[in-house]
Length: 419
Image (cartoon, rainbow, N blue to C red; front, side, top):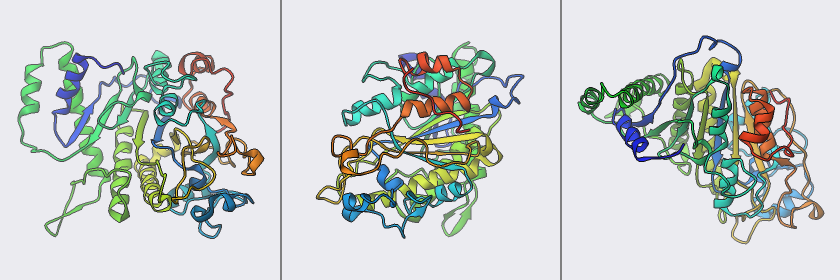
């Protein structure tokens, strides 16, 4: 989304509607063909910023070179959540593992963007822009997806956070939701602003839609969130603010579950967004990786669990993909961590997913197989994974994927047959 003073002003005004949320949502009426199969399908992209260690997300405990490279940070075979003869999941990913056992979660264990610089800024730009070159465009591939969909099947986009991530910036305005503290429900500011802009042909409808979306958020949170203790009494409908990805323990997992469930609450509303993006920070584990990943992966697992349960029957129409800008070094460093690497693991989940094994090929961890003698070698272009999901699941035109959504990506073959 391209920011301008007017657009920023509209965002500030619509966020004044209260309920402790910052939401802008310029929606559309439900179309006549809203009951068609394609119009029910949903896609959620979870970005783990900082370089998530794929060899911990899906440890290849059956690879003979794994333990020797990882040393003290290796996950033992008996501790991992077994997927097959080679791969397990990290012990914190209990909800993902339960979905995998039902055929609703798979891994792409050696995936990477085209970028090889190992710079957070450059790799994140390539991941979210969908370009083969750094800083080649100011729009994101999810926004261009929304732009490319035919008029008969236009979809809403939603991002979670205070600022629009690159992945959803572009010509199509996306909705935003930022968890925050509650406000006085008797505040008159929303009513005053609504009256002020009632006759404005641009601001009036935008502000009204913002108020409508705030109501959707309140309904979603009330339905999804269990009571929170207040002065020793259960307070129905109250919801704690969302926690950062690093917050640990039972409290952190519950906050994460609520975050995922509330996002799902938006997506199950009539006319709600069908494409969403959320970013979780804190994956740059140069030291003390074991403890950090236990916390962060538990949080991620709970977000995904909240999405799963919150979507309810709509889970069968949904695909969730969890990605990161790059992986970590295959060898542990001297501080119990890992450094910037290349290939990592993508998690692909959803009720729309077909059961199956790993996505892509496994290169192995022998020294000759390592990329530049240090990293897990990529065998799958991340753009191919995205293109396959957008084409098969969301019905995006194949030619548009190669030229408009992911410019110059004809050589990145779409991974088909996942849904």
